[in-house]
Length: 312
Ligand code: BDR
Ligand code: CA
Image (cartoon, rainbow, N blue to C red):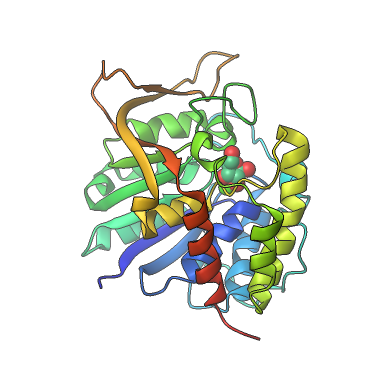
């Protein structure tokens, strides 16, 4: 099987960390070229550090980690420590990374990889879209060597950071607009889908009982985060937003969706960051917007893959 060349752009963040573990546990599916980080759930100095804590935990020191943009394109940074904790990865005792941060900027890495690509690259975006937007401004020709972008972001129903907006899009709506209008093959996984994959005590126990340090850490992180998300948004457990992106790349048949026209609201104070999707087909489609996920099969995939990571 051909391994898909992949770059993951993220802001770990507990659910980003679980997404990274799922990708790091899938070396036969992904040629993971690198992890790029952005300011989001916590500031950039923590997101890049947390990404390296996760590659260390997974014993995948071969995967380089880059730091990107420290703030959104126009707006002041918005963070989410109230959900992910002060470190961004509260709830587990994670190792100090031994792997250094790469010296190059994440945007330069993205551009260089796309320009040099023999096979078009897949981008998985799990945070605000600042890095990709800046790369597209700096080198618009990279659209030709990006195979597809799969993005966790947006909400067709209720938002989570405001009634109308989801965190990743709200945090940098101008970047999201640049990405949506770039003419890329874009798949959007909104809250309407990610709220279908909520942790339960049984699902957490299955991770905890995997018998490796990854399973223990994942369960600890998700217990902490589930409690915080539950308090904030009235959920029964932790929604695994970002892992949906990786699961979609591994098993797209777990999801269903429709092509629709997508636009980002960047002006209205009440609706800033709203993802406006047109299900009526009045405008031509520019994104595949996912609507459902098979939650039991999603958790089976996640648990099996994390169980395959190193034993200690
Ligand atoms: C998204 O926002 C972040 O807090 C999560 O990591 C996820 O990417 C969910 O709205
Ligand atoms: Ca994220």
